[in-house]
Length: 97
Image (tube, rainbow, N blue to C red; front, side, top):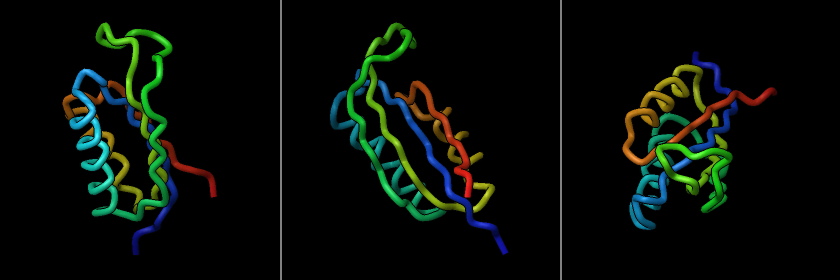
């Protein structure tokens, strides 16, 4: 039986995509997480200034996902964020119980 753990993922999305594409990207990741686990919350922080320029961009759209899943899914989510156009950075951490 798979052990279910709590995770949080912050995904930083390029605002050069446009508002609709950013919303679609957020929806895509929410559906992906729902498919492999349980979404506890989606906190859209919105447009924020980056600490340092990434690909010559100084602002980006931040989204925080809190979710529960088995131990294998976060690695797959990380892989998908790395190959998704418009995702500048992402970080997934396991919450302590």
